[in-house]
Amino acid sequence: MATDGVATAAGAAGAQGAAAGAGGAHEAAAATAGVQGAAAGAAEVAGDALTAGRAAEPDLLRITDARMLRALAHPARIAILEHLALDGPATATQCAGVAGLSPSACSYHLRALARFGFIEPAPDGAADGRHRPWQTRVLGIDYGDPGSSGAMLAAEHTLTQIVQQRLDEVKDRYRAREAEYPPDWREAAGMRSDVLHVSPAELAEVRDRLAAELSRFRRLDPVDRPPGALRVQVVLDLVPWFGPEDAK
Image (tube, rainbow, N blue to C red; front, side, top):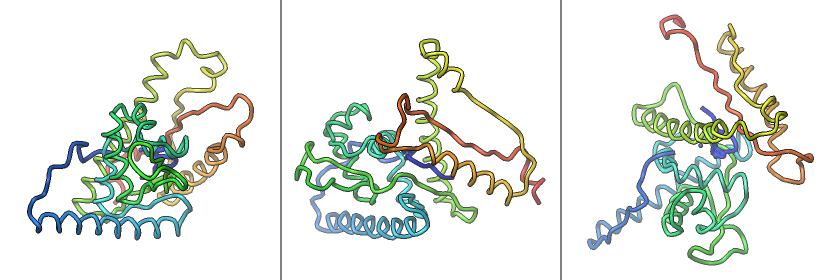
């Protein structure tokens, strides 16, 4: 599965997992060492993943580690990463309204995203706390492998469910106020469906060609947008309409 501009995301950037209140003092030296080791491991995993992902496509992160998926799997983190990808650098206070959390809770989630390499401090920003602006390191994520382990599949499914919830929220908000939109927007928007009879290779070709066409209109930089251009969510969902036994 691929999520572009997340973190659909975008995006996106679109997540479940760890609760914002994690914390508690670790009094034992062994426990402290374990936390530090986990953080170092997360940074190493994130660095490797970013390198591999960007080698294939700039700003698209290919995730192959369940720990990174679990780190992203939280509605607030999906909302924050999406906000940074679409609207640029922001502080914890600025992200609070987007995520529906307090600035201190957003600070926690921002640090978690940074620990796994999804975001980083913006250059020339404040040094600490809620006034530090953060920027995204990726504009989309890509995950899913036929040979995934059970742990990886579970993490993929969890993240997919949260991303789907985020996508549905946008659609539901539009539906609730559809009658208020101008006629030209209502005419252009809406769901379109079709049925294809294709081989796996042909389906991949269809996906890639549609994705390439859509990317022409992403225009994350406002200066690239023509007058009247506004943000629209597009979901490309190619679903096999047959049982797995039919593909053998």
